Image (tube, rainbow, N blue to C red):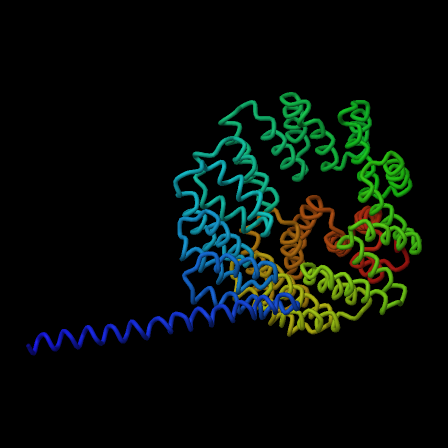
Length: 555
């Protein structure tokens, strides 16, 4: 009887607990509904940070996969990187074998340069049953890769993917990504692996042509281009012109494009490339004529108008340039045109109109807020107000915490404003928080070197970045500059020349010319600067080095 009474007591207790649990669950559900309502209201009001953080907190407390997915959507829309990482991690916990959840987790990790974490996630994705590895890679290449820098995406994919099961097409796709990541040796290796699978694969030869040409290796570049053309005359019709252009053999590239104009199926693209070729190499008269011809033919209206606006700007015809940008904005290309127009207005002293042009667009397009914030800050830096630009970006970081682009830009603007110590600290925090971020490592190393500080440490940081991206022109430039600062002029010269041949960047030309000038090769220095000025007449770095070293011969 005693035992029975005890059991009755337990049953009664269970009933009480069960009865209590029902209102508790109801209360929890009601609280979650209230949180989500607040989050959606915040989103509608443009209070993105609050919306993303509320959604992510709700997802952490829930086992609802759809809620984790919605939290991720909001975090991505709001460019809230910590919330994005948390929401993606929660989705993966709730659905560990969902390919979409794994892709989202990998993309979130790559966006923050967490390459090791992304690699582990991608290995899990490739190990899932179902789709073949080529299909998985294709999905990743078309989605995740667009959301990250080439280097972290390439490195994670290269380490995670079962390359022995890749088709020739996937190997070339990964090789192209390796090229964009400035790892030419691995890009070349992947192209050759593809040819091992399919000796007649034209795209592999086209990739080889691109790699060799960017390295200024004429003979193998042209051999590979001709092989690609021979194997696929239609699909690779522009490979020879592209290769010649990259090699700097502009007249030959132009002749090849002129030849292609006779082919009706290639004529429109040939005309486009001829116009771009003239613009890129500083022949503004020819470029203007060709872009006008394209407009008259009804070809590529937006692109043609954009380049005509740039040409007018280079010629100081700001009224014509602003009219063209206004037409582009009216045609739905505001994200492209408005920053350019605002920059011109600011140059002319119309600050209110410049700021309004950017702010008005963001009201209707909040997804462009980060891009336009950076554009505004950079414009201010161009007119000597980098400190205000840094303050604008710092304020934006309150809305977009730990945002990779904003964090980096804030440090760069601090340096431009003369706050060198603060810039070095900011870059150091970024590099410490994201030790696989080669951009941060290189920027910190370069900033130290440029200000003559801790040169051994600066070089070590730069070499870490270069080990990851061995052909990146910005990193090669940094290494050349730190070697110059440390008195190693021969290596500095080699590094800077290589960096310039890869990129044609005017700041690198300024550095290369300065090294040449320092060893008495002033004619060669002037040649380098003149060539760069022809392509980049408004480059601030070139103007400054000429004013400092060759004021009597500015051109």
